[in-house]
Length: 180
Image (cartoon, rainbow, N blue to C red):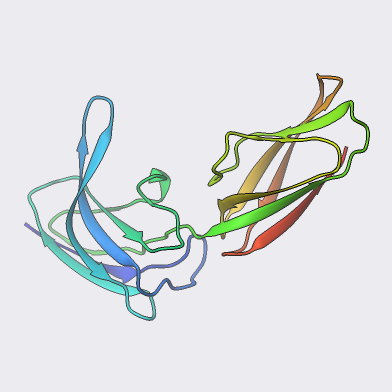
């Protein structure tokens, strides 16, 4: 059966086109403990992010994803994969995630105080511990509303927990000031 997919490649949560992205149609193969993806065909998005791809396959589990240098790997974050219906003409947009950075400024001069931040979506670290007068830059998902879970400690005891949402841009840095 022939499956067709066409649409645009946009940065996640926007209508900013991603020209020159390689768009794949792939089949999903589920195993007991993992899932594998097998590329069936690919194409390149044009200068407006538009793509057209056609593939012949008898598989029923098909997805679209895009790759481009400077963007997160969509197969690592499976929430942004786009399903297609086999044997039909599918109009689907694909949304890769650009990177962004958050600069977290913590100004606390008392050495008995500290802040811990849970892992940040798109981050490459397990978590961040901030101590007196700290400024940290972390890579995160761009063009997204990202949640920062912060925990304030005094003498090792949890004093408070706050959830702060940060709207990130694309390929840029957002400043966040933390104070308790």
